[in-house]
Image (cartoon, rainbow, N blue to C red; front, side, top):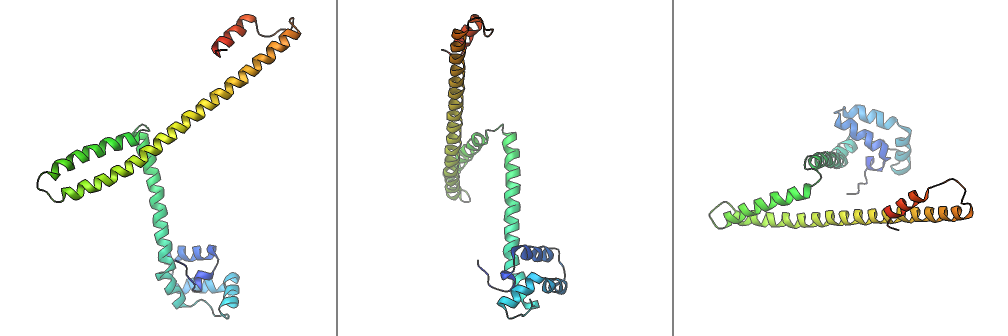
Amino acid sequence: MIRHGKIARLPHAIREQINRRLQNSDEGGEILEWLNALPEVRAVMDTEFDGQPVSKMNLSNWRLGGYRDWEAQQEALAAVRQFGSNAAEINREAGGQLADHLALCLMARLAVAWQKASSAGDDPAGELQRLRQLCGDLVALRKGDHNALRLRIEREKLDLTLKKGAAEEALRNWEIEEAKNPRKRGLTQEMLEYIKKELNL
């Protein structure tokens, strides 16, 4: 949501400090005294609000609007960081095969929901519907995993092809040099044959 009040028009760094001070339960009067003394704030107030300072009402409105948005954003960021940390730990515990484990868990839950659907229960049909939606999400996740694996295999093939091409080029150059100067010390013929065999040349 775009806000147009006095505090919303201040630079981001100052709004961030206001939010931190509100989060720390600083007194409104202290915040206003500090805020209205800042040259950047006075410049904005002079330019856009006829020199009127940030008031107690402005701060109160910000506390109920912009600050709440900021708090929600901080909670979302913390949740994402926590989820990332948890996901990494879960993936380590699962041996990197998290999607496989999720598939087994969901299949087990589907079997239970299927069984409940045929008998009386709270809401087995609703449970079955929720699990179907989860399965759709899991299918998308698995497709992503398979695409990433396919891409990694293709990248490894390309790396091997490039390495083999570089080795072939090096051997051709060596053979040219050896033909020009057979007495020059270098690879023995046996070593050359071994390398060719390893490279399938």
